[in-house]
Image: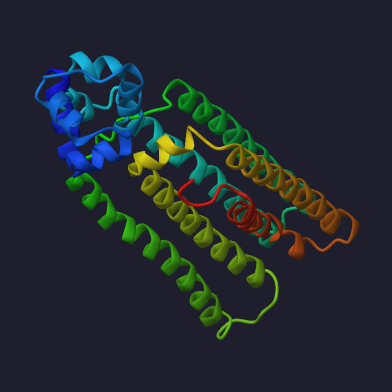
Length: 297
C-alpha cells in the first residue's frame, strides 16, 4: 500500500475528516487531499506528526500496509499484559491470603512465631514478584513505547461484558463474606478458635475478591492502548507524580511491616497485627490515586 492509501485508511478508521486532519497538522485541506490522491507528498516534520498521531512507524506508513499492521500484535502486547496482570493481582492477593493462613494457623494452635514467619515469607515472596514484574513491565514499555491499536471493537465489547462480572463478583464476594461472618457468629460463640477460623475464611474470600478486582481492572487498562501510548510519553509533572506515589507505597509497606512486628512481638496483640497488611494495601491504592498520575495522563 502507498502513503495515499494508508492515510485514507487511517483517517477513515479514526473517523476524521480531511478538514479536521488538516487543522491538527496545521496545513490546508487541499494539502491533505493531494496527499491522499498521491498528487503531492508531505514534508518530513508532517510525516513525523502523522506517525505520532496514528501510532504507526514511518516505514509502515510510507511503504507497508497499515491495515495489516494494526491487525497484528507484533510485540506480543496482549500475552505480556495478561501475564503481567496475573502476576500483580496474584502477588497482592497472596498478601491478604497470607494473613488468612496466619489466622488459620493461629486457630489450629500453631505457635505464633511460626505463623508470623510463614506470613513474612509470603509477604517477601509477593514483594519479589511485584518488584520483578514491575521491572519487566518497564523494560517492555521502553522496548515498545508505541503499540498499534490492534483490538477490534468486537473484542473490546466482549471483554467489557466480562469486566462487569469481574468487578461485580469481587465486590459481591466481599459482601458475602461479611454476611456469612455475621450469620456464623449468631449461632456459635465469639471465642477462640472460632474467631480465628472465621477470620481466616473471611480473609481468604477477600483475597480472592482482591485478585479479581485487580486482574479485571488491569485487563481493562490493557485494552486501552491509547492510554498505554500516552503513558510512555509522560510530562515532567507526570513523572514527578509517579515517583511520589511509588515512594509513598514503599514507605507505607515498610511501616506496615514495622507495625506488624511491634504489635505482635512487643504487645502480643497478634489479632491486631493480622489486619496490618490488608490495610497497608488499601492505603497504597489510595496514595496512588491521590499522588499518582491523573487519569488520562
